[in-house]
Length: 277
Image (cartoon, rainbow, N blue to C red; front, side, top):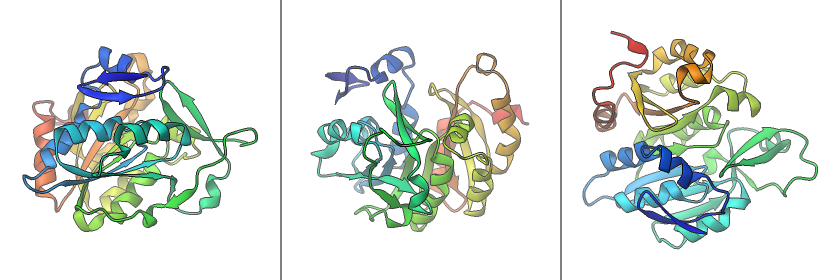
């Protein structure tokens, strides 16, 4: 079926929950669009990598807001017909059907795709009886874009903490702003028990300024990346107490003054994450 979601017409399977989510939480997904708008420069297309592109909703909304060159990477073949229908015909978009990995591709042989409500997570499991696996691709093998990559988005329901440092290294020349989902519970289900290491890895790569949103699109605050390991104690509280399920995180490189300025603007008056002075 086809639905208009946040001003963009999208083909999607009937069971996809995107339109229901945005009806309840209108800010959902708009942080990424706002990042793209802030990073876009007049007369120059914005280079963006969209890992976990799903049906192409993020790419379509960014393209409706700014001129961009986007590489969409999707690791679940179920979403590919919708992704291709929604953005694949746009000359500004390249669709790459592959399961992105950071090290030994053989390590992905024992994962299965679990689809719920319009998203896919890949969980460690016996793959017998599952769909034919997608081809794997190392992050280092991602093709270049025509425009400098200034925005990298990763939403892979559990693999983001592994992928995002590798993506930062792959496109280090243009010091992109990194935007990714951070969910320790999903990461553990995906076989990643040491999710906290992502912060030290990104800090070592030069990333410093951070803005955090909840999964509904509301700003939780701004901080520096070195403080995030301590702030992760929020995930120890029950979901009903903290009021959200996971973080959306945007990080800017210390050499990227423009990216840091965009993060400051998006954080607005939200204050410091965790209430620090």
